[in-house]
Length: 388
Image (tube, rainbow, N blue to C red; front, top):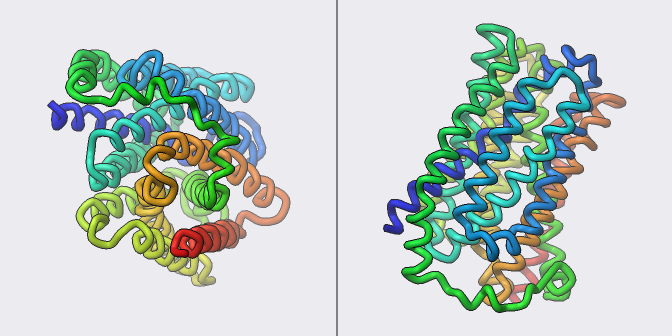
């Protein structure tokens, strides 16, 4: 029963990843059609991730009241509706309006499913779960690239992904009895009576501020890298928009392939080593993007390596939470970690958008390097604190 449900959860995480890379892939064309500044993609991204922060913080209450299954199904339905809303939008205010359910759906499903998997499955499945997020995030730029290349229509790209989301929503609603059966077979009910730790209580635990800062820096780097990769390739490297949208998916392919491999080695290497290796590979990717060479190959390989390095960081930080802060606190702290991660996702992309508009789009790899340095400092300080 758990194996069948696990397959459904993997499909749910594909649906979570599908919308994440669409905006960055389509924006080089969208901003010209709407007459918007290049940096306005950061504003839309900020609205989406702002909604994600709100729903992430509310996810524990929602899950206790309605259950993981219903929260997941409704969240996917919300993102499907938002995608169709994007495809029908004729103005920037309409895009901003549809960005609200776009983000609200993502946060609730992310927190609910991560908690469910942490309760019922081993750590290797955490890596593979996030690998399936990468499957969705990798496929959607190809869908958008094909739509732009064949018809010049970014709207078609959004509608195509919206149809996929509707199919996944139907599967999730059909699976509701299965989730109830698994809960009846062994989910711990005591958590429903335990008082919430909350943000204030979490911040009082030693080391929590460090991991929140690390998560903020990491997700800021990941989201900025994904959102602006296509624009960087078009504006700095001179690659055609349709081709750039397809090549930008290399970043998400790196994350996906890396997390697939992590599932085989994470238990042997341990969370700390996985995080360090990931940071090292990310640094190599930034270096290749920075090299002032005429060939586009180095930038493309650098984007791929940056994604590959990102692969172990997110699931390893989540998996190390019980060991770092105690099992009794892990559920609450994981929720706060995700909220902190979405803060980074909210503010870092528009910040770089302003830098790109007023200084230079070519500072893309420099900005990533600064966030990477912050991630390294925070995680190593936490390691030293917990090793005492």
